[in-house]
Length: 252
Image (cartoon, rainbow, N blue to C red; front, side, top):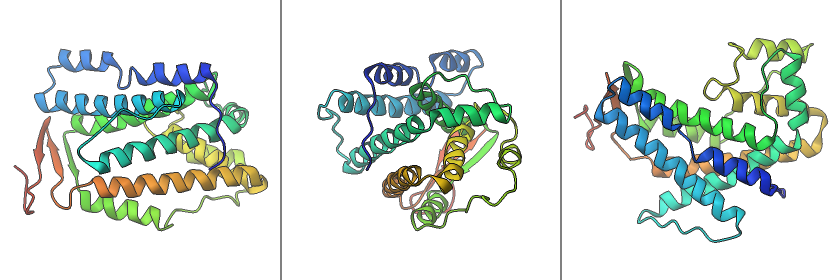
């Protein structure tokens, strides 16, 4: 792991941003549109997850041991590894923030972030939004078995190779980011990673940062796999969450 120095001002930016993830106005909106009890519960679960991450980061910034305790050791492990991943991700963003900004302007993408911390907060906001989204689709089926297989494939190195032999990097970026809005869910994280992957072809220090970030991502993926139930899953059907049977064969 490469050293990552997060200035006090950036620490405050990240903690303040996390305090409102997912944003409270979304809860007010849900109440206005008469969201179901299951949808409101899902919002609360996502909120709890990001507040736990905030607590872990706050302890890390203060050089203190986390006070979070869970009867499930796998939850504690997951939070520890999530902390390591996002600190490493901040280090990547911090090291090439100017490059990210220049690339966005070059391909006519809006880049409103003034600091790496603000950009990291937006990535977290988008991830929370993507987690919330499943509850508001007309139908969504979550299968732990399929996700486990997907994450296992990533952890074992079955990753898509970036198209780095394009004649024009500008045309490559333009072809890979549609619609041209970095605020949509996880597109912002993909943008950061792809810009850095391409730049790393001629930058060994950046290549090392990406390598260490990939290790943190693999660790986090493995922790996610261990957290998932062996069977079951859940299904969203018009705002109602139906849990999968622990013996298989349908939802209740």
